[in-house]
Length: 289
Image 1 (spheres, one colour):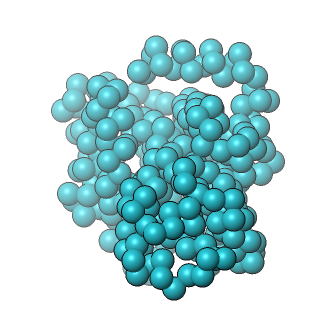
Image 2 (image 1 turned 135 degrees about the vertical axis):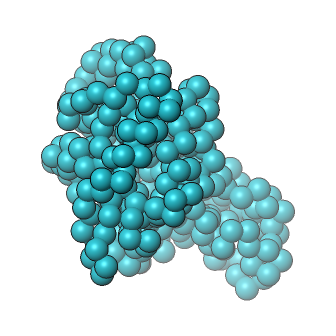
């Protein structure tokens, strides 16, 4: 429920229980009406991952007013459901989806610059992801990402307001549910197949924007996707959204198909070394913005 009414939602709960509010979508902050509830200290957020009957991750979202008892109740409920819970503060995107933003942004930029959807996905699956990011977008529905105001604001702030998602949604290319997205799908099939219409659209889009398309190597694709994620993950830890870096890794291992043998994005960053990561962030920023 997006904004449960404080009167109706707080009445049925005893003083020893917590009122659990599931926030609609992790691009939201903890809803402001919480402060108007009769017992705001007993409100927590549980962000399940789709499909909830399969995905084990739950982000347990605590507000500034959340009491230890309410938090403990949320943790106990998640354990009873045999899920993996990660506690985080209620900031935009929480943990996982906030880190998705820079990856999505770089994918859109690389599509403009010369990469094709199947090339980006192949690079990330070769790295170890269960699915490529563009195939995931088709699975979830491209209109879901298109509605994300945070992504659109970040693109504008970078001075590169990429409108590829706008064009896809306007053409009703929403992914598997419409049979076409970044890929095309035969009737009754979930197998993504390269679509020449997407390549033609990307070429036309780049020409209209004066972007000279080029071949982009798999190593560059992987680096640009991961470095942005790592940088955002470090910000999440620094801001205290989670208690420790390993919380970020658990979110990505349990909810986003990050390759387990690589340990999670921040563990992987430790293996690369902080000096190397910082140098690559600076180099990519100077080259691509």
